[in-house]
Amino acid sequence: MKEHTHMNTDPEYTAAEGALLMLRDYRARQGDFGITGAYDERMEAMRRRADTKMDTLRDPLKLVAKRLFVVLDQAFFLIEVSKWKIDYLADVLIHAIEARNPLALATNTRALIEHIAAYSSLIKQQRKLEESLRGQSSEAKIDAALGRTEKFLSRAYYGSSASNDQDAPSPIHINDYLKDLKADVRDIGEVYDYLCEYVHPNYGSNLLVSTGQLGSGQLNPPESVHRETLDRMRRYCSLTMIYLRDRSIDHAAVFVRLDGLLEFCLVPGAKLNNVFAKREARPEGDGKTKETAYHFPKARTVAEANEMSHRFLRQKKYMVKLKEIGGVEDKHIYDLYRTTRGDVWFRVPKLPLTDRTKPS
Image (cartoon, rainbow, N blue to C red; front, side):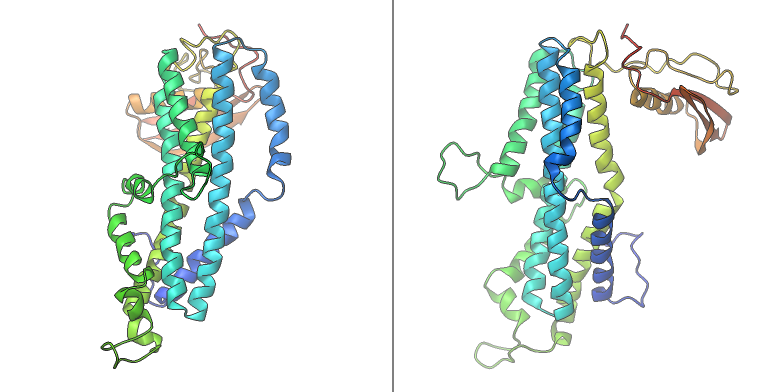
């Protein structure tokens, strides 16, 4: 886990101070944005609205929509479970650093890496589901994609090697979680192996509380003796928190896109063989003024209209310097993109399209 170039490396911060800063920052952000209280109570209204809409559908689309909603519901719940566990580990690590407890630091830094790996794997699985569904028209392949994600979620939450229930799903091995994280953090295997050496009751952990040779060393030496090792662990704590912070928007976007696919199922006239089709970004208008702004009449949802705007700009090789809100009306928002080739206007819906737009 190499140090990122955007990490605050001001020499006035020691490794311990930097770790405490990042761990506390994570906990503060969780306190500001995390879901607290009874989860089911907060989600019940959304579930009722979704059920009401999905009950108007016909199979096989109805079944697919319901399965996709359950996957989203369960995955979001598991995300919150993961965040709570990481929050508790951050709390423990703060105490370990402040108390200068080397064993607690090593043990919980490794646990933090394990939970970050599991969290990353959960996000990656949702991304795979989105990629498998988008553009897919085969009922069998849609079923298989949902089935893989359903199995992953079941194993990630219920998996236990200690269970006496033979029907209980097997847990996902930490090596599989680490393999998924490696796509983002190339040296995560080396990091994990390093921490394991100081967690297992062998020479590594012995060194944290002793020096010298067997039978003649110093017991419980001052921190300065092993500061390089301890600082390395503290930097891993900092870098882990930076990883979560820097990817938070990208991780949230995965769920937004999947929710967008669910919305496609609820558009009047949707059919399973076209519901996940990726429509071409072919706007009307010329984009030169607010009055002639580009717009996408065939967009099924607000999210799809926005995605088409971004895709159109990429396809036409516009380099966007700034995006501004150029105007707001009862039913539309006007987005003004300042580009290297001049201003480009887009008109996107302000309200959901599902009650008035049918797929062609």
